Image (cartoon, rainbow over all chains, first blue to last red; front, top):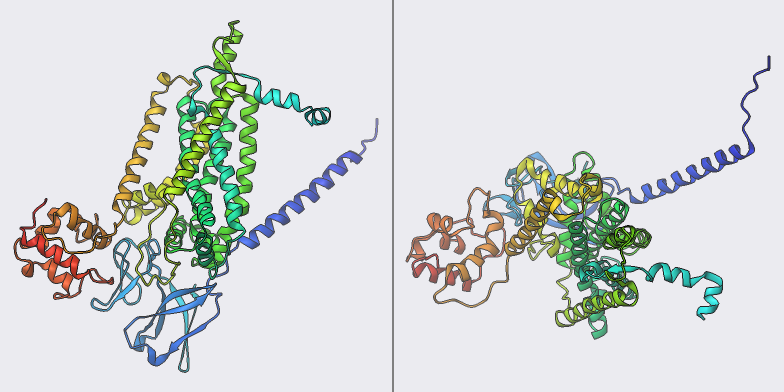
Length: 152
Length: 449
C-alpha cells in the first residue's frame, strides 16, 4: 500500500492564490476608499452657529433665520414655544423639499409647490407631505440662540 | 505615412474590417442615429472641456463664472452649444433606442450591444441631471433639490442615498462639487467605456440590417445587387446625416442662446417654484397622480421598473422573431408607453405657471386671461386632489363668484385681503392689474369664454 501524501500546492497554484488574494485585498481597499468618500456627513455634524438673541424671537412666532453652512445660506425657522421650549425647523417641505413659508394670518407653515400644510411644530396638517418637518439642533445658551445641523 | 503605419500596425486590415462590408440598399438615415449621437457626444466633450477651463465649481463662484462665460459672444456660443447639445443627446439617443427596438435589433445575438446602449442612455440622463445644477441658478438648484429628494422615498436606504448624492442633508456647495466631479469624470468615463463596448459589438457583429445579406449569401444569392458598399456610399450618407444634425445644433444654439436665471437662492426669497428640464416633465407630471402612500409608486417603483426593463429587455422579450407582424404585443406596449410619455410631458409642460402679461384687460376671456392667473398663482395648492379645487371653470365660479358683482365675490375679497387670510397664502399678493382684470371678467358676467 502506498502512503497517502497530502496534496502538494504547486508553485503555480501558490502564485495564483497569492496574486488573487493580494488583488482582492487591493480591490476591496479601493472600494473602501470610494465608500468613505461618498459617505455623507452624519446628521447633526454641522457646528452650532449663533442666529440671534433670545429677545429676537417672540413666543409662538416662527422666525426664518439663515444658517451659513457648506458655502450657502440655509433656511431655518426658529420657534420659541414659551414654556414648551425652543425648536428649530428645517425649512424644506418633506414632500419634495420646496421652501416652506410661515403664514402669520393662519398660523401655519405652507408649501407653495404642492400645498403641504404644517402646524407651528412642523406636524403635517394636510397635503402630500409624508412626515413632519425635519428638526435642527438648537441650543439656547444664556442670551444666545444657536442652531446646528439636522437633529437625529 | 500610411505605409509607415501599415508596416507597424497593419492599418489596412483594420480599415478593411471597418469600412469594407456591404449594407442593404434600403438602409436609411434612421440607421445612422447612433453615429449622430457620437457626433453630439464629441461636441459635448469639446464644449464641456472649454467650459471647464473657465468654470468655478463652488457655490460662491459658479454662477458668476457662468455669467462671465456668457459675457463674450464666443463664450455664450460655447455654453449654448453645450446646453442644446444636452437636449440633442437625449432626443437622438431615445430615437436611436426606439429605432433599434422597432427593428428588433436587440435580440440574439445583439443582447450585449443593447445593454451597452442602455448604459449609454442612463449615463446620458445622469449627465443631464448633474449638468443642470452646475450653472448654480434658481432653476438648476431647485430642480436638484426636488430631483434628489425623490430618492429619499426608497424604503430603508432612501434618505442615505439622497444624502450621499448631496454630500449632506441639504443641496449645498458640497453637492455642487460632487455633481461636478460626477459630471466631468465619472459619467464620461462610464460612457466612454460603454461606448467602446457598444462600438466594438457593432463592428464585430455588423448592424442588424446586414443580417438579411448574410442570409441571402448563405442561400447562394448574388448580394451585390441587393446592397451598397459601406465605403463610400453608406459612409457618406452617415456623414451627411451628421452634417444636418450639426447644422441644426449650431442654428438652434445661435438663434436661441441659452439664458442664465437668477443666482441660486437656497432661502428662496423670491418664492421660485421648481420645475425640471423638459425631458423630466413626464415624470414630474406622473408624480401628480400618486398621492399619499402611493407616492412611492411614482417616485421609486416606476423609475426602477424603467431601469430594469431597459437593461434586461433582450431577456424579458422572449419572442425570437424580429418581424414586426410577429411582435404585436411588444410593439403595442412600446407604442403605448411612448404615447403616454409624450402626453405626460406635454401635460407637465402645460401645467407650469406661465409668465403673466402685465396691464389691465378690459374684456378678458376665461381661457386667455383668467385661467393663466389661476394656473400661475393658485393651483399649486388648489389643484386636483386638494381639499378646495380651483383648477377648472366650474369650481372657480360655483364657489367664489357672483357674476356681475366683483365686490360680492369671495374670490376678489380673498385676493384683496378683505377676507383673511389673503390669497395666495404665504406668497406675494396679486398685482392690482391682475385683480382688476379678474374684476372686469366678473363684471362681464364671468363667462366660460
